Image 1 (cartoon, rainbow, N blue to C red):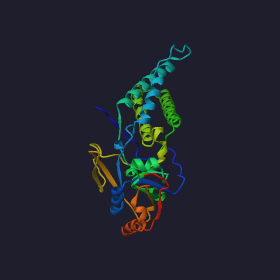
Image 2: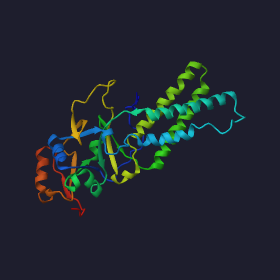
Image 3: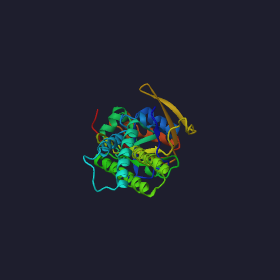
Length: 306
């Protein structure tokens, strides 16, 4: 049975630079747009149900390959090693083997997530997420996502070199912590417990970075995401947010939580290249104002797509 590793509740570790503008765009079809405005809420769904089947697993695979190299025994023993150093080295190799096994079998705890782009008019986004260009891109105020109690805003990283460097840093810190604590510990029982403590710390760091590390093939999306600070409910944590529900997507039942919107949460609406509302923008504007979300900027896609 697979175990589950959760990240710490504080998701502040990791760089979160400012987007090029103060708006983040959510591409969606007409029905989703209507639902967001009428319900004055955003739905955050399970990360494991997103269209990238490597979601939450991309960084795990990089870590696993790194550990294949780290866990290899040296070709020959180092004659200058003391008995203590040799014992530490042997224990460290065993630690890498255990970590490699944990990464392969452990399921990272799922989270609720909402996806946005820093780009307001990208044809591939219109085609993939906005009903082949018939839908909308909702431009949310970045300030609305800052310092929220329920979620944290993160910029997705796509650079594989950066991902590998992050994993290298985690393993270097793991090695240093293990060696320092092993040398300073005299009690055999404490030494036996030490690998488990160090393993849990390393797994927590990898799980946390996995929340916003993606395959470089998705780089064009320029994604930002809001990620719930608490994991999805399970047997150990049965609490569910008050505003939640279920939806069907391609026959799959997906659980979601809702984040209420406030007046001026939405700053701009961009109409897709095939959106018929481009001829009646005033109706869209009135629809948003009638639901207490204030006046917004209206724009059209520049894509010549039909």
